Length: 439
Ligand code: ASP
Image (cartoon, rainbow, N blue to C red; front, side, top):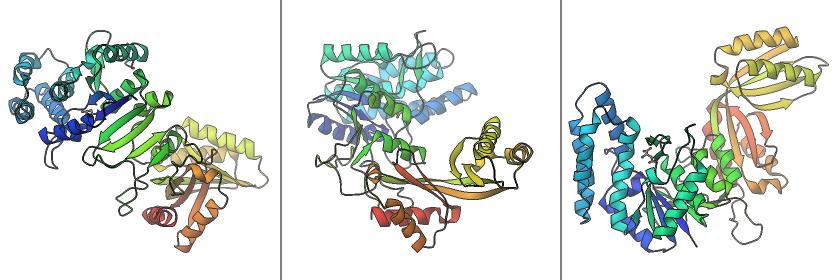
């Protein structure tokens, strides 16, 4: 068994959190690769080191002194070192950067130092070999990760050192310069490490006990999802759930590696396991019938009607018009003499009038109608495919609660049922569906 454990900023925010990480690592010897973010917030009034480093760079750019911020960052590292009784001369290394700050250090290199120093300290504390991301995570000239080179270097390092710690979020360009990934990029570094060594599990340690069935700002105390497939997760993310970024999932998804989201502050919780496929009847299936609910507000329904229309032709013409205005279509419903398209109101923007004018000219319909203020709510679940009557129960629950459904769509893979409701009913619809299927 081989596990890669990535710890996010809140998991390494200070000495107390380092202790929790150590206990987690020591409780399972198969966690042989650790990937670390930069120290994050210790409390709600605190700052993430990455934010402070970006702020520092902004000061330098505008010629404002950043001495105070530099001092704060330096002290954070020194405090961790001292509280844990470590040897690393973090101030010494940190001070070497200062003469280069003004002119010679790019923003990426500066910002990457959050991960670098946090990881140096954590590696010493855990007794793991520090392997700099500049020596094992490589970008190509196109700015994309060079997976072949990266995977080979990480696998080599693990072979050589047995237990390694890699800073997340950055890597090296072919020019030798440091490049950082997008914000939250340590998730990607962790996934790359897991894919590189064909890990059995990629653990992503954070400050929540997994993905929740619904948004906790809408549903009180929603249950965590214990198992979800990559396909379901994609569906939920597309419909607005804030879960892991697509890029961070891809390397492990490609290799069929399970991804386990865990809580550093509650290691006893199993968290959410994201898997390729759930084997039927292996006992791992949870009781809950649906996996998750997510939704997005502010869509427009565009309805085109024409008696005895040639539906394929008129639909194609309409889609071409929307394409010309770069408006992606979310759903299409077909009637005999009409069809309706759902698109984001923002994407339509001011082009909506030109779109309608073009439809009138090209399609020559009897009527074109738009209805704004629609929310889409997706109920996602792999079990819905095999069970008849799900849509009926869903519509019944919404109807009974006075929620009018304006449009309905079921994903072609039957993983989700999507309903369009008035924006005013958005939150209520999510609560009703949660109560009916997951409460
Ligand atoms: N430290 C970086 C950020 O705050 C990367 C990460 O934490 O994943 O975005």
